[in-house]
Image (cartoon, rainbow, N blue to C red; front, side, top):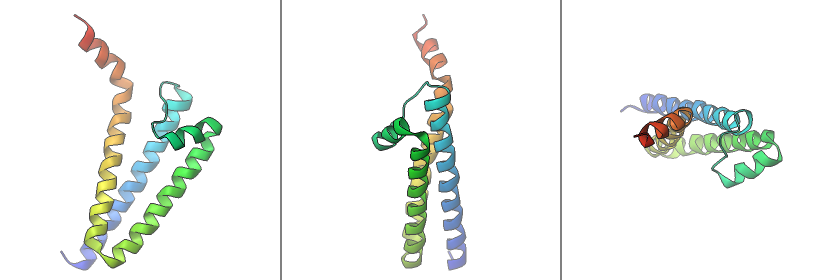
Length: 116
């Protein structure tokens, strides 16, 4: 794959990580604060959410910016490794997004499996 195409693939993956991260935070805020039906699984973010949800959002935003910066530097050194790392993180966030989509259906699924 030529260099310019590799960088396009990398930037798409980075954009996907950012978008999925925003979705994850929005879903977490909804389920933990508005719906009150879940708790944050990450212990650090959980503590920040207890203090003030804005702290959790700020911290998560800072971590995404740090990841983005590190990946941009890594891409200059080894684009193939940066692509793999970025898409691995994107896969993790895709799984989290799937969990956030299944969460509202979970009571119905559990009720259906338990019912005789």
